[in-house]
Length: 310
Image (cartoon, rainbow, N blue to C red):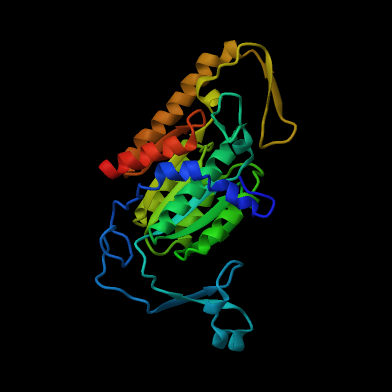
């Protein structure tokens, strides 16, 4: 845990959790547009640091990369982008919609407290960012609810990890989910193929969601889908009349007898997950169902070890 003199984002880098994944790697399965040989396959040979293109400056960028000649001509700040000497370019997408606020009572405790789905996702994103930057890979971050809230382009510098962790720690779950349009938008933004990691409860219309995932695959990205759900959402253990509140629409509540709807509810959840599994399998998307009942570090370590064996 951070002390009074340490920034809040350090809580996301739990030493015990990092120890479980520290000897593992996240290796790209497909060909990626990178230049360091050995870990990932690349369609190129040799190294390069030649100029590639300009893009508009965003907070967190290194001001040393500003192109002052362009500023003198346009009075706008632009960053010079170079072909990075990196194994992989990855973008982590973290769902920050209202439904991710749900914690329940069956989730595993971390540092003495129960994590909501969003907090679980924060820790997953932080651990993956730490792991990939330590591999000298470039990592970016996007957070979203019904709109894209923040987009930080991929960088491989060690100092970039602080930018990512700071943004993760500062983000709070917000409004309704509109996942599929966000994914389509991001698929259009990412020009160099790489790895897209999506961390979400995926509460959207399943066919629209699968079409959006296909958009990434069509553009030749590798996709890792971390489907985070609370154990209560998977088992519906409630046994008495209860009031259920919609976490994305303020004031929307429903009072019902859980025993009367349990079978139908579980059937729909199982059908939803099964359709995701089949659709992802057909597109070669790596679908990983996660329950907040399992500690995030153990679940992530298990997945990474299995992925390396494959």
